Every structure is written in structure tokens, then in C-alpha cells.
Length: 276
Image (cartoon, rainbow, N blue to C red; front, side, top):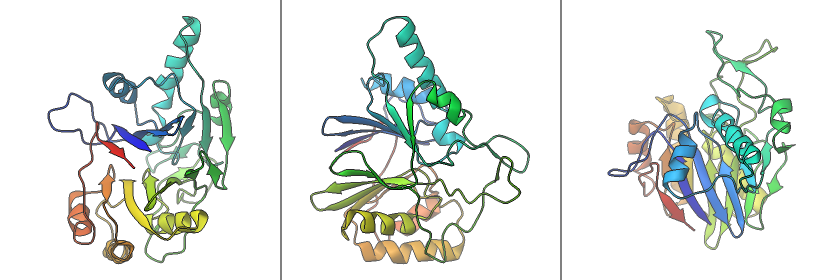
């Protein structure tokens, strides 16, 4: 499997890519081409073009969860496919997979839209859409994990906004991730880890029937985290004995410093290519 960072808060030094507070990974696994999240804007298209990656030929687009920094980039991608159709440019429309609640509108306390800007019905007009809370095998070795059980007592404690039409806070139940079965163990690919990275890893280990985890890449949602959460996460990751750790996006500097004490921390930015 090859994974290329198309969107992240940071970019590689001396590389002319664009960054934004969002996330998108381009993944090649055997003959399948996937986009995991789409970032916030058309930056995903700009960076992909500069890297020679043609987003008009994708097998899947996978959404980790509903928030705008992971889903709003789908709008310029739809526009790109529409232009290709109108101009008779060769393309292959991908299948989209997400949690059943991923396209329910989310408002924060100031009534700003922080969820998907495109509805489920509108998306179905452009791409084949599968809403799945259960795991889905994308290839023999790459798994969409579905809804993540939340079993730790130190993660997923803070809600973010409210789903439209609901009178309760949203704990982002639609948050999910991918797991890749590499030769030496699992690679966990996550968007924001609202479900908790420890919960995500445990679910992946159970689904894949593999205890070894060699790498985690993605946002860990450790932004000035409560002491209880950070300490619990460090204890858990230390036991995994990771070969490397690639935290990015929603992981702050102090949390990265703490994580570096228990795992070989690696730099992440737009343009990074990882091979497993």
C-alpha cells in the first residue's frame, strides 16, 4: 500500500504544496485507488495535480466523519467530474462509503455549519453511495472499520455541536477509520479520531484478528486534551510498541512531544508518501 498526504495543516519544507486545516490521503492498494477524506476546499485538487495524481480515476472516496475539514472538498471534486462529463474527458466515477450519519447537518453553538455541506440525496446524484456502520472490505487487506465501539473511560468525552433537528450534543458517532493488514501488523489510518484513537485501534485489532500494530497515521484529536485523555492515550500506545507514529492534522505540538516519549514519531505534511 502507498499512502500520499494530499491535505494537512502542514506542508513539507521546500515543496510547493498548499496546506489548510483539513485532511485528505490518496491511497493505492494493489489496483484500487482511494481518497480518504477530501479536506476543506479545492486544495485537494491543486495538490493532487502538482503531484501528478489524477482524481478522475478513483475506485472509492471514503469519509472518516462529517466535519467540514474532511468533507467540504467533495464539492470541487464533484465539479471536476461534472466538467469531465461535459467536456467528454475520460473519467471513472468512484463509490463513496461513509457512516449513515455522516451527511446529517451539524451546527455549532453559533449556528455555523460544521458538518457536511452536501446532503446524502445530492451526493447520490453524482456517485454511488454506500452508508455502512459495519466494516467493509475495500481490498483483501484494506478495511473500512464502520462505527467504532467506545469502551475507554478517557476518550470521546467532549461533544462538538449538534446534529440538525436533534436536541442533544453530538459526540460524532459517525467517526470511523481504515485498517491495513501489512506483513508485520496493522496500519491504522484515521481522520480525526473523535471516537478515540485507542478505541479505534482496539476495534481494528478485533476486526482484523491481528494484535500487532506497526503504524498510526492521521489526526488524533489531541488539541489541549484533558490530562486524563493524554495520559491514557500514552499508556495505551506504549503497550503497542509501534514501529512508527505519524500524528497530524488535529494533534497539537505538546501532545506530539508527549507521544514521542512512547513511540518513534515521524513528521507529516502535504507531499509525504508512505509505503507499506
